[in-house]
Image (cartoon, rainbow over all chains, first blue to last red):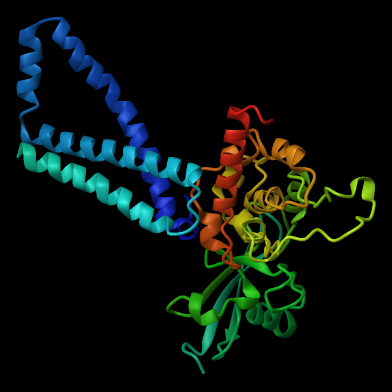
Length: 114
Length: 245
């Protein structure tokens, strides 16, 4: 079991979120390609799938997916910024901005679809 | 007297496959973790092995894992880290071989300073010759400030013990060695920049860092090794892209 005591600080959490969101997005990709592939095999099949995605559980999963994507994007920009712009301090503020961006993206998506 | 009146101290005994021994130590109002360890060794169990020298945060020899986090014990007040019931858990530094009890073997840590070319090589005096004059780097200049940013490292090993990449990749040079390399890369008097950049590039060097920034979070001297490593990455990126190396 990993000892969380030495790892409980914001930049470590940002690292974990970046990694885990990347892995989950990679797991989602086959499903995404399958949905796209179903468009080739027939309009009815795609429509059927799209109708299924209207159910609340699928919508909730979609929102989570948007948050994951936004978190991974913001986390990646954060890493690029700290490595290329040479920011020395205020790293925790950058983490907070990244997290805020991800949650805001999720909220906007949710407001638009619900 | 601070509360509680007695500290319940779990201390690692033995080598890597050792165990915790429990001691009760009187709590005092002003007491560092090193004071607690010294009390155990002098009053309760003289066989306890640990390391310290200056007791004032200069020598970097007393670092241990205190309640799960690497810290310099001579400047860590018990009341800032103790559990609600007076519990203290002391282990040797992580990511290093255990010699015995609270003493970790820092050889791998200092070997990596050597591998990162962490020593100054005067530009004006190759082959150990004495330069004719002092190199003047004004204290207010940007070059001096960049070199000064990481120079106060005391080599305590706290960053090295806090770094997960060190645990995952045994060859990884670690935050302190890379911070030292970055300090020298920024030193305009140094003549071994190219070799040093070669030494810190590659799988065991700065590119392995995942920027979790535990080193910066835990450094007792408030240095920023993570920024130093980012600086090395940036320097290597542009030098390679522009064909300067």
